[in-house]
Length: 428
Image 1 (tube, one colour):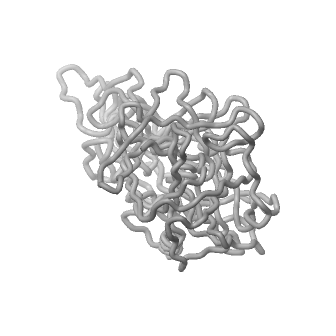
Image 2: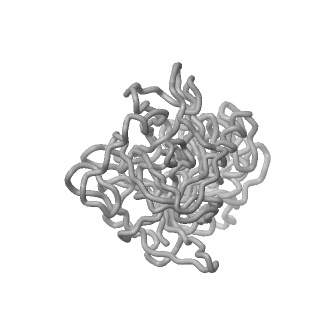
Image 3: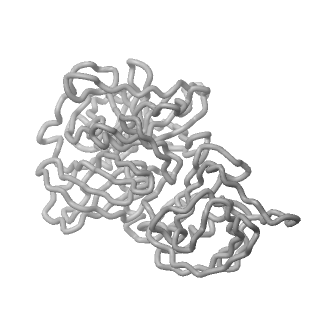
């Protein structure tokens, strides 16, 4: 089954891009309508709209979803969007149904800027506290360098920061700056959903900036899906999901899945594409709130990142590949394709082992050091670096503001060493 993770909205690949899932390879990508694309630090394809600047922030993922018999199915990702009559949902040519005032209470619209990808995105979220704690999907804010949140019921906008994220559960918690007196969403964490129960998905469908609704029923419980980055990188398994036939689309990510009484039983996170029949998936609200509570403790774990990661600002070539689709770990060391420049050691020398740099992002510590394509980072604070993956892992152990000593060999074979202070990177 082909799945769109519904966060910000995404669209067809840009000219020259390859459609994901065409060969049945699990993948995920962030998208927008338009023709300009960039690769995020997490390896998600971001399309920016040339006309409007952005639509909805969300990943589109082609996944394999187990059937009752334990087999799997896959299909190419082919997101559908309406072309006339105002915003529409997948497979529907008529205008989407606006959310009611009641459905809008406790719901927010999320807009992000992805500075290092030259893109923007949009999604949905839920108000958890009166002072502005927000629950959403991790993939809605993945790669964001700035976040603006608008309360749907009042139209008031706030700047938001990331409290913490858990990519393994696709959950993120944000904090609004200067917010007070907000009305939280009504959740039903103790409710046990059942198949055939009536539900309604509400969200920023296709990133239009307004909430719309889609009704349906629960078709299955405790479902599992697996999503991966371009080329099969960074696979993620989401389990225990609610499956519904509500017409969930990109942009709905992080939005509420309401039960018949109007209480939130899940947050929308993924949906099928490429066929008239929609299969949507939502994270049970009890699961999402459980992760939020762990984040609120301020304790990082193997899955949870508190705040923003430390950032060096180098783009590195994927391990063992001179070319390829950029892959971006969450530590601020995006792996990128070869740029036509490879390391050229001095005559008679052995190429150094380490992380091969494809480029340095402007305004980052890497650029300040003068790191350039073809350089090879060989150690960080005395820890030998043998691959791009290891560099990402090692830097992931530091915090923004930490000073580290880097050793590298330039493209001519000359060795260098210098100290640099890591900065705050994009959300992951």
